[in-house]
Structure formats: structure tokens, C-alpha cells
Image (cartoon, rainbow, N blue to C red; front, side, top):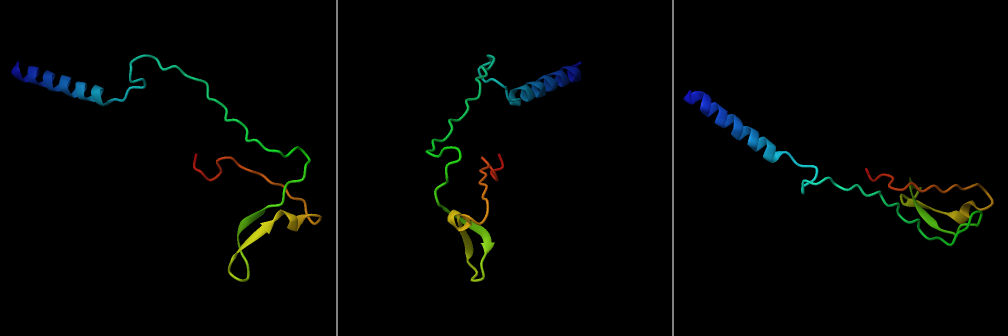
Length: 95
């Protein structure tokens, strides 16, 4: 009888420890209010559709003959090739 009572006490203690370590979804015990995710505001720009972009320079991952990284200017392509600029939000951030 003593052995059964001891086992029950140990079982209750283990169950209490497990319940105490389980994280709760809402720490206050009340249901969490789900707020709609706010969309970030679009950045302000003075460019309009079909307007020419201002000249800029970008570094490249390519290396030139002198061992230095190449840099490309938008004006280098004017009248020679079409240029498409694409910006990927959160690219290469792992998120």
C-alpha cells in the first residue's frame, strides 16, 4: 500500500512539473486578440511612370582586369541596351 501511494505522489509531482514547463499561448489566460497586420507605407518617390531614372552607380560582384570590383553606371547603357531594375524586398535576409 505504501509503495502504491509513493508511486502516485511521484506521478503527480512529475505531471505537475511537466505542466509547469509547458509554455502557454497567452500568458494572462485570456484569449489573445488578433490584430490585423498593418501594411508598411510605400516609400515616397518623386519618379513617375515612364520618367527617366536619375543616373546612379552600382558596385558589381565581377572583378575587372586590375583586380578591383567593377562599377556600373546607368548612363553607360543609355542608347545601347534596355535596363530593367528589380528590387526584391527582404532578398537574402533569411526572412
